[in-house]
Length: 135
Image (cartoon, rainbow, N blue to C red; front, side):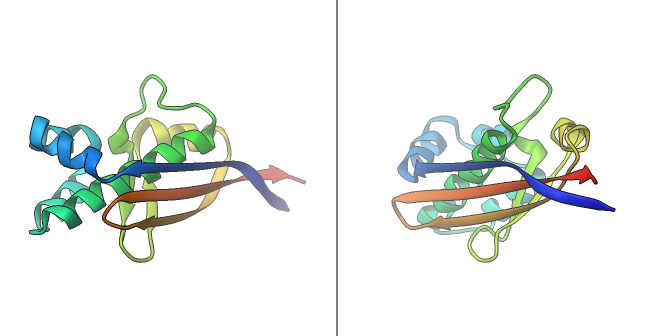
């Protein structure tokens, strides 16, 4: 039998206008660096710049919260694109890929909870990671 325990918790809050400035400065390059292909496609279909910036800020806050919950930050080999956020405006969901998924596996992280929220000014996320422990 296996039990799970709280492995880590991370939280982040970011100003939405930071992503408006980033988009003006770097254009789509910012999307390619920060977002998975699915996240970038979702952002590209949002016609309202305010909603698009809220999405970017929410995804970034959730990704940052994941790396904080891991206790590693964004370490060598991991990428912002390894962490994918779906339904950022409703029931936020998290998927991990690549080196981040490998790190989850090495740490026996088997489940997680994520909560995201945003308005026109701030985006925030909280992530809880749970690891399997043999009993």
